[in-house]
Length: 230
Image (cartoon, rainbow, N blue to C red; front, side, top):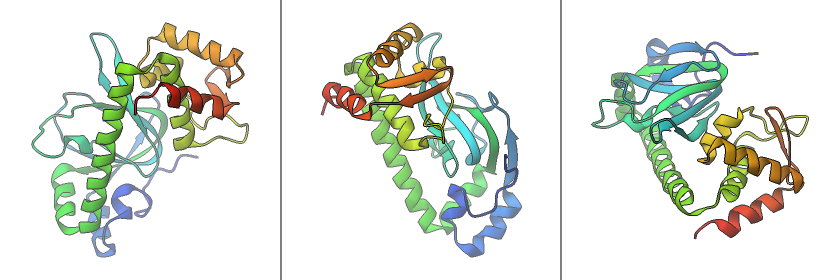
């Protein structure tokens, strides 16, 4: 069941705000119900505010070449989206689109900046998030340049398992189209299709439709570690 209103304690913003500031958050937030495939904002759109995931899953992606996109990360409950536009930028440098229906908590950029000035814990945590995003982006770019597709697919599947876990059936607890998985891997659709078949034949994974199970995690770790540059 999709929760349609933030409880003022679960999202990134509320988790690190002073209790006395929460009434101000309640007065300035806007809860938005999002559908699968709905855009929160597009690359190049004017910056208006910051988005906090209360439920659902959002992909953060960027144009890559003339007709391709690269998925930089997935955001789930408790995560922040749109923060890369903080500072002097007047346009979002990335796009954000829902891959699973849910609820977003939105605040205008002016209010968020005021909130940072008042809430030191939130500001420190945001710096940590930005630093982690930068490190992950640098690692992804290095892997795209030097890691074979098979290693990148293995790394992508391990990353998804670490972030989302598995459901009762043992499948990754996120359903992605093969195109989204290819975009997250940084591979052509045809290359992803071939590698997924190989991993299935090697009993590393089991895939049916959008459901994927990791059946030999150590083999995927070996593929990722043996092809990744230190």
